[in-house]
Amino acid sequence: MLNKNKMIVKAAYIQMRIYIWILLAYIAAGLVANLIVFLAIGNANHSPAPVAIGNMLSVILIMMAVVLPLAFFRKIINTGATRKEYYIALMIIYTLSAIVLSIINIVFLLLVDQLYKDDSFYFNILEIFHWDQFGIMGMFLYQFAAYMLLTSTISMLFSGIGSYVGLSLWVIVIAAIPISTSIASYRHSLADGLQTLLFNDSLFVGVAICLIPCCIFLFAGWEFTKRRTL
Image 1 (tube, rainbow, N blue to C red):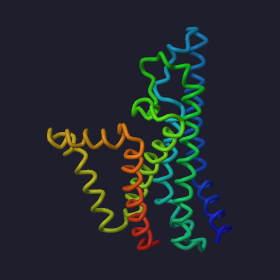
Image 2: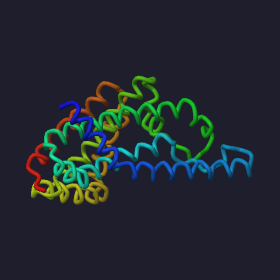
Image 3: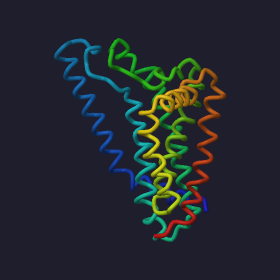
Image 4: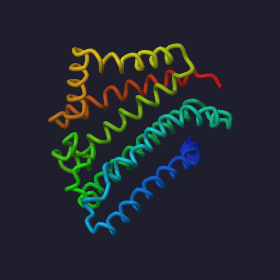
């Protein structure tokens, strides 16, 4: 069982490899552009670095949550893996990726991103959401919980795309976005919800608010996966 899970995780990495390399190439190109500007101007603070490098790497989580349920599911099931083995491997991948990317973003914040502190266009989610107030371990926990919530939500939606319930969820989500942003009362409720979710002054409450729906969405994703057809 363990060896089979390792095989599935490795196969998932192979599935994602091209997307990861494309993202890394994009980030590398941005760094080269920054270096050229730095050499030309002589001041790194005037180089265009609007997004922290660690934040850009976290896009990998979104790509995983889209690509693996859509493209990887059928491929791995056709090789003889069960739906349970596939989904366990999926949760392992999401969890390990969230852990690694959380650590990377903290390392970049503490070491590399200091170069851009005076750049008015620079941002890092750890500072925007004030997660840096909780220290290194607090930053890691809050960031990990938020990453897992994001990944489980997207994965659930794409896992259920072939069912009536899943399509209904897509309709609700698509309809909720313009409604919640255009109607004043809903807009305020949305802002309050995001404030509680991402800007919470309590580390325990913030992490719990992220992880509780994450567990629900992972369970819902499993329910969709059990019923998926090839």
